[in-house]
Length: 196
Image 1: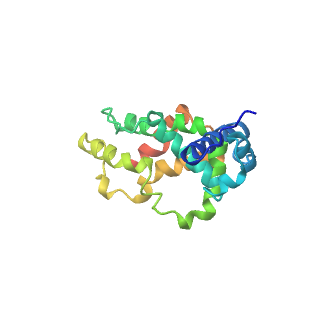
Image 2: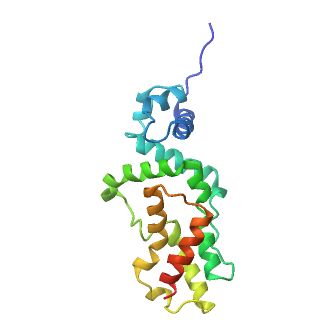
Image 3: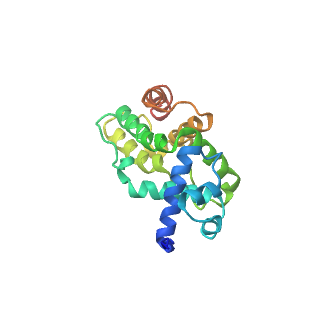
């Protein structure tokens, strides 16, 4: 009689996280269940619940792990094209591969599942996120080139938060977020707001 190999520890965790991504992309966040993840990982639901207490927790961990394993999906170099407009377009375009990988509907569902837990988020999302980490330096470069009327440190936080809010509005409304949308956002909203 052939013995089956039973996964344990890191091997089991990896199998669960890999299976989570497969089920997420196959069924979508709203329709996926812990039972489907367990079946795909060749384990049982208890093994998942011992590690993650919710579907949101296991999906978030799986997506974060995937992006850590594939760091080139989102280029993390500060855009410095020599043009404020082009730097903003590069900044706003970089999340496209990640959005396409996860799917805009799945991102919306994940965002909505996160909102009830927003008070437990350990950091200030509006001030510490992908866009904000790069925008400060992009603004400083633009100031040195004479492209800004207001020094970056005097811009209102609401103005600097626009890239994050715009992307979030596209995700929540499930509008297509693509290169054409980025150019429109930069030309019609971000440039006027940030260069006033």
